[in-house]
Length: 517
Figure (cartoon, rainbow, N blue to C red):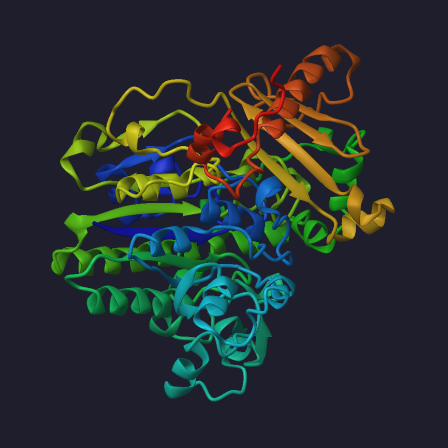
């Protein structure tokens, strides 16, 4: 049994054909959904790349794994999927982005810096890196992509900046995709040499090398994340009128929540408050998604032709969405379904999953469910003192799953953001914790008012009820649910649950006879 865990970066749940987008063409992802189960209510545990991915890689919520923002390292003491697989004789290969920040202080404390195999594994978050490529800054020695580009004639000290994320304006001058006004232009790089094509090639080459041996591969695309620069012909595949309408209301700007008001003053939000920005970026964003779909088709065709697809569990998801101007916002992070809800498709080729093939599952799933699902699929016992998610295998097999979750959880640490400075806050004040039930989205902000949205009456989340006196009792109940949830997080990790069971009331077996008369 192989596992192919595909992640797209910053891909909205509503930007696929199979989720109802009226114009976006994603035939290969749609076909994957027909081969498996599409989870219609999948949510991330943070709307930020780093902490979201660490929840995918550890099976733990940000409040327990501790990597609460992109620049916060995952502790060397955290256990990742790669290490769990390694204990079963497998490795977790990476092609693309991981966003793992090495815990240099932790490695130094343990005297593990210095290039040892263990230090390298821990610094990489348990991944065996085929080609690591984060795609949001000039790439370095961690990837072969710059050399690949230079070998194909892109003569530059920085071909990523000069070709991959740049076009040529009407005067033939380079125009950087860092300026979103330019993303209607085609990237200077040829499509077959683009980031998405290159990383798909790495995945195909890896599975070819591994033919006949079991493999687990995390194929992690950097698109459709910014810079939103698409190569021809994908840059012009869609017009602005073939994009979803922007979801925003003037009511949202009246009596704004203080944190939301601060966010809306940040540069990316000011840009996306302009109609020209929205109408320029959204077609390019959709083009990048169709390009990604095309290359997934190439990969699936290769796996099928080599006889590997029939033995491969395929998981497709994203680390969060993208506002693209919805709610007068750019980027991600905040507690709207636009960002927190993600595509999540699982295709298990085994006969046990035939009963659910092609169905849409409505129950809540979360990022933390990835690790226990992969372990369960491979028959590897999960370290239950660590894992906070649940295996989705019972849902894939059509089995009765008792006591399934009634809400999803997400959190935010905005201490690195300009919004903190606008609000004049200390870095320890910038946290928010949220529950999302079928009807309610509740957010508890440190030192700020609550947020509350009635998703039944207001599915677009235009009316914040968090400061209304009439919702006080409801908010108190949701806050109590949140407190109960947080109190149940797994902080006792150094002993297994079985060891606790075995050691309960065992003092006399250890020769300790306290309390006797």
